[in-house]
Structure formats: C-alpha cells, structure tokens
Length: 250
Image 1: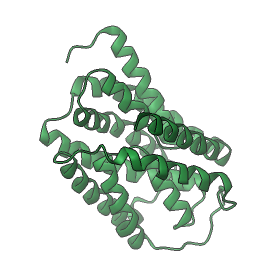
Image 2: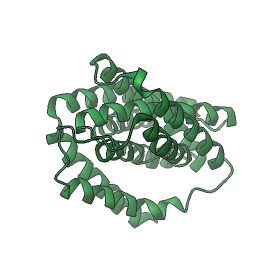
Image 3: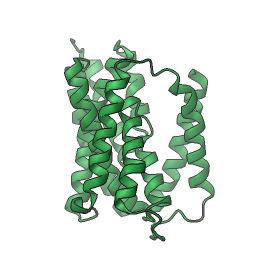
C-alpha cells in the first residue's frame, strides 16, 4: 500500500488522537476505524490494522502504569490469561463471520455506560468494596470483554474500566491502569491471529502506531495527574458521541 504524504499525516494524527483518548477513556478504535475505512481498507483489514496500531498505544500506556506501580502483574495472571484466550476466540470467529450486526447493539451499550458514569455516585478516585476476586474477574470479564475486543473492539477499554469500578471496587485511576494491561493483552492476541490470516495492512498500521505511542503515553500521564476530573467527563462525552455516530450510520 503506497501512502501519500497527506495520508501519512492523517494517519499519524489519527493514531495520536486515538491513543490519547483510548488511554484516558477508551473508544480510540472508533476514531481509528473510520479513517482506515476511508483509506480504502476492507472491514476486516481495518479491524486487523486497528489492532496493530492500537497495540502500540495500549502497550505505551500499560508500561507507564506498571513503571508507576499502579499495577501488579503477578496478581493479574488469571485476568490476563482469560483476556488473551477470549480475544483469540473472537478474532478467529470474526474472520469467518460478518460483524455488521454488532453496530446496532453498540449504541445501546455505550449509552448505558455513559448514563452509569454520569449519574452513579460511586464513580470516584476512592476505592470501594470489592465484589469479585481476581479469578472471578478474569473468567467473567476478561474472557467476555476479550472476546468482544477480538470480534469487534471499539469501547473495550470503557467496558474494562466500568467492570473494574463496579466489580473490583477500584478507583478510576487504578481501574484505568489495570484496563490498559488487559486492553494490550487483547490487542496483542488479536494482532497475532489477524497476522496469521494475512489481513493487516502493515504500512498504514505502523504509521498510526507512531502516533499511538506518543498519544498513549501522554494520556497515561493525564490519568495520574487529573484523575476523575478528566476521566469521568471524557468517558461520558466519548460514549455519547460514539453512540450518536453509530446510530446515524447504522
């Protein structure tokens, strides 16, 4: 795939914006996918290439959180494994099926998330009572959200964050940090199996990946410096905007 300078700049800026938003609130895929489709990629190629560029952003953010000791990888072994296996299953399935029907379900899911974060008094940087252990979280959330990410993807980070707040009792900053680790896990699993299927447009993906590295790192820093003041409004805004976009295009 030959890329003109204008296209390269668009892909670079798109990767940066997607990485920044995804590190903070999730939803970066909904920024990247329309651009990839507009560049002439097929739906499966766009999903596959999105996993390539998204892996760099989530890796950058996850690495930052681990270095800041916001995450204990040893305690996340089961969620990481379940997320990886779920994403593998979803990626294999999407290469056999049409994922179009999910576009009609996404607005409902995203609007529900936006309303939850908007009105729930429990959303804060303070940790609450834990309702589920690490193993249960991995089996219930890791496998299911990982499967969804492998099958379609947009909003995965938001789903993980919501689950960590509601079920694990984490504050927003800690939930976001753990989310990036699982989001990178599912991206990596999908990337490997999309690569086996030969669906990735490597040149476009690598250009966006450069922007993702920068945006993901900056977004991770903003999470720790701004906390709920930044994350909560962005989650509400991003989910509502994505929902309206999906409703208009479905």
